Image 1: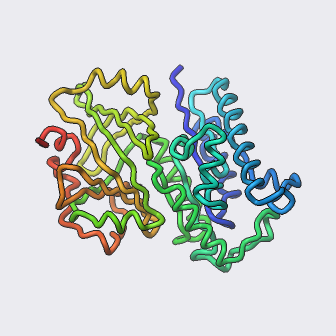
Image 2: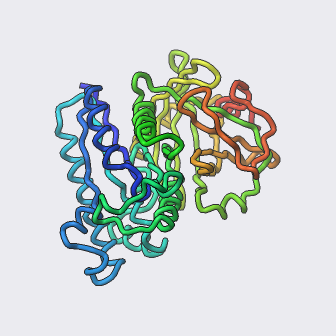
Image 3: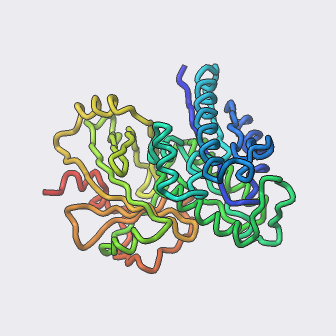
Length: 365
């Protein structure tokens, strides 16, 4: 039996609507024949059980407890999910490992996860997608309350600041979506469900993307932005099959990498069917043996930037010093967005095949 297994994170600032969202996810995707499994929020479990940042030796000791507990808990849920006899399985984590990062320094976080035999890239990108619900403290302050969660203590100002830090912590993940408060709460939850369905490929695994040629960006400015993360990518095209574009990708940072295989088929310039699967390093190396020798490997630095709750990917190539490519993935073709003022757009190249990576792999010297 061919199984569809996805592991996603629902995160967000305080009083963002997660509890309602999780209930709605269960109902909606069960109706689409998914077996939905929930990994409960670790911090709330600990605090309501009497293990708090205030009665542990220190706040850092609490974070050590939380990360150890969450890592082991997710392993147990992953193992259990692997034994389930179902075609479509959705594992939903109420917050992920990276959420803990905002409560400590980078050095403290790295120290704890290293002691657990982990690294940040694998923890962050070990989830298939991340959906961030914006706190009510940003744009819906009249609905912000601490009364419905005994583990919530933040003021409106603190909640908004924490929300920004959480978005920054997850920036760099290949599938990060932010659901803001631009509609009423019912609309917010409906948009979340639609985003998850779109990611899962219900009813079809589509990618809707617009692509722009931009002036070479000021890299020092990008790296100084908290909600921007540089990722190294090496992309290799495989021998084509049945008119489909096949590629494998090594993606990572700081010497740590994860690997993917992607199959793409164009519908329009903006819309494509995209099927992606995670690879082990050995699977990746084996597929490299089937590389299309008429194509060059594409190496690029990708700057993942969250701006006004939109996720931009800015690709900087070693063979250009005057231009770069900016992409934004959309939920529908007419979706509106705004570029950051420090990005200078030359022209849109969504329908220009010359600027596809597949063509650049052929044309570069």
